[in-house]
Length: 204
Image: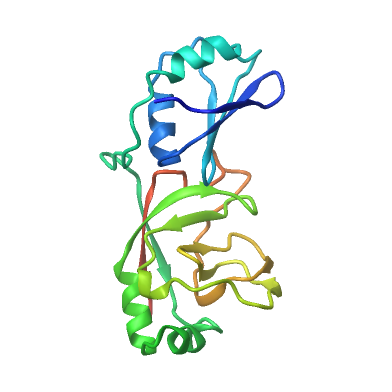
């Protein structure tokens, strides 16, 4: 499979992914690199970042020529993280109205799904979780909040997420969680990593 790659300074390449970036990242991390690079997953890309000079375009093209056809990533041995959540969010009733569901149905759909960490962005430890039931796919709020509290469990578009810290935000708030997601003193600092599976457990 031919993959487009863009130079990202002299120590990295940004690889555009027509399929699933998590699957591509798994394949890239399994290669025998001379100097193992860091692989950073994005929504539609993978960044290969080297400690020293990155391989040239011709060498990289030769490696990427053997990339497998787009396919779902393997979940064998994937980390499974359960996050407790109290479904007490400010937007819970509004989400139910927009989706044409009861509040109980929204809670059941959100807590009954298994999610996957696709990538991290926006803020340290903020994980975009795919797997949100289609009935809950809603556009972002038309007016973002100036402050969303840390631990807010939210949805927007096809993703769910938990805000690891207080920040502005335009997602719909379904509930709150008191569990840690990002701590600079821990190693690794982010609890959720691309490819991990996440389940939400409703708390009383």
